[in-house]
Image (tube, rainbow over all chains, first blue to last red; front, side, top):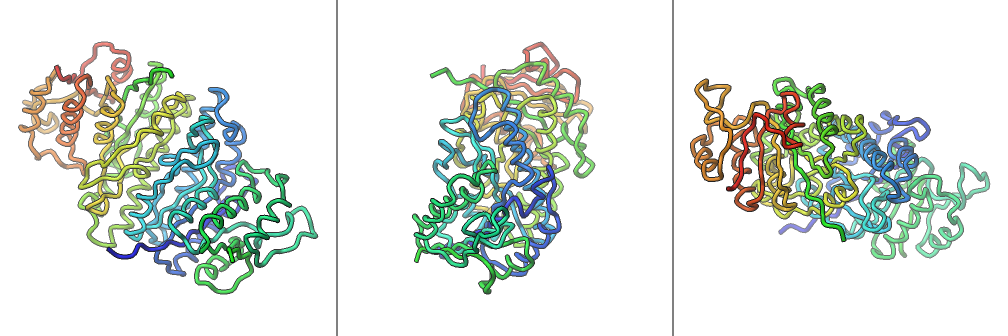
Length: 269
Length: 269
């Protein structure tokens, strides 16, 4: 049997693929450009995970889906959150198909159960088979059933954590709407310094510093993201993680082909 | 722990929820009416499975998805088939949400693998949890990865077979576009006789008689459907199956509340 392909994992953040401040508004021109950059990079094995942006987040917040099941009134909100995410997922996959890239939706909530918000088991059989067929599985942050809480929000970042560790991915690219990690939120603090390279230990220190102030979105914002990065590096020391600004032209392309770009690179050693 | 609810399983055939002869045309008025009938029947525990109709079938046929993987050219067809089914699924779930029924998509291809077209394992954990939360899981015929063939078409009817047997469903309603089973295809043979009640043995005899002439759709048409009914009754002798004409007003409602209607009823004894 052939050696299994090691996929590159790309996250397309919710603030990249949607207009975060306008309900249900995809950023079609950015989506199309990113898909063309992926096509141009000609990657042998790829998994894409996208965020929720103005699709899943506002609905999930309105119905407090991330607090778990408290009352029957939330159920319709759970339905609506899932529908919103399917709608965004369909738009993104259409952009891949438009470029003749055989992307397929793999609905996280159909195969992942969480317990207190954390993934319980993670069967990659189907994803591996899709990769073997040279298809591009596309997953996303989703509203899932939770063993303890009834339901919860599963972030795309947590999915990436599981995928990266389970599939031994060596290159993981997080596309966000700023250039990478900063010592503070650059949108609010002009003194925030850009972090070009960071080790595991430094990342942990930064994590403690950021604290939980930055939790405006239901998946914990940058704080949630960094905690998932720490999980990856703890369990899989060959992972090289790049946080890039996917709203800037060719950053994703250059990250995919290992060109030097402005980004934050995180590795264990 | 409370006794698990036994769900009623409803199939909405592809020829019911779409216009079979017009590509990607949902039958919105029929979908809306059926959802209202489900609402009115006030079912405690329900699973809905829908067919492909003019969404999945034409695309799957064009790319010969049901023949399994033969060439890379098919991959984009696999993507397109999945996208088409997601689009139809979204329309149907929107109709449930419109009536404030908390329906949620459970994408079959994200958790089911087939081997030579038959389901391998079938984890109902998530479906059970959704039912416990009083949500309505909505599944559908889909294009799935296949252990031997690379990929294949998984019919909604085969999904119902697995759901019915695994969850010990006692009432399974197949909504199609004719009144029930006939001794031959009533659309082509005016001498075809309607079958009101049929035992397991008679069904097997009918199955042998119909043969494989009626296999115009990729999932085997009525022949495929009957073979799944036989599987259900072989493995689960308490199943009561009703085949109804879901295009006729109130047939689904009356079937759900056990009113006498024109239909074909099939039971083991």
